[in-house]
Image (cartoon, rainbow, N blue to C red; front, side, top):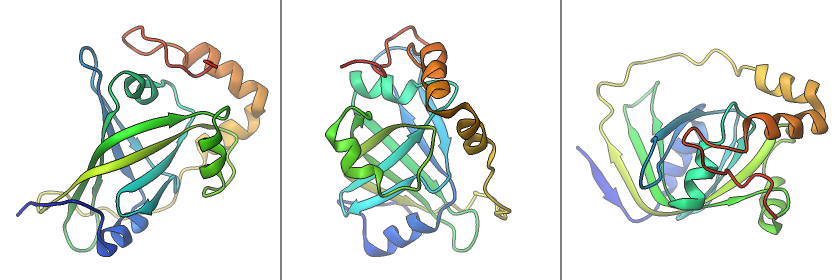
Length: 181
């Protein structure tokens, strides 16, 4: 039922590119484990062992905090339509902010977003597929525009103020690195 691979195959890349949602899991050695749903066409396969994801502004900044302490990450995709499949990408990740050259290297891969907070680069060292037989069928209706509309309305200065208020410290009280030099 499950299969382990060393890299993302062309078929799995096609599957990834069709998905409307994926889930990100990170954790430090101690403290809260974080699992977050992500969408809005924010992930790109760079090659068979590298993906990048545009992390948009949210109510917390757990992933970035965890990755600066423990750089392990899991990305999970589930087939909610068509043939059943669960796909997990395991790897090591780096967080890039606007101040980093790598942010500029990747940001043009994505549509412009006022809420762009970080780019996460993941070196994939294990790909696992499993059956997904218990994952329900769900129909995609449309993308929500609430986050984009909110970020556009806040503008660049408003987003930075929001980061200062909500994104500088994790749930467990650790610095997120959002304003570090």
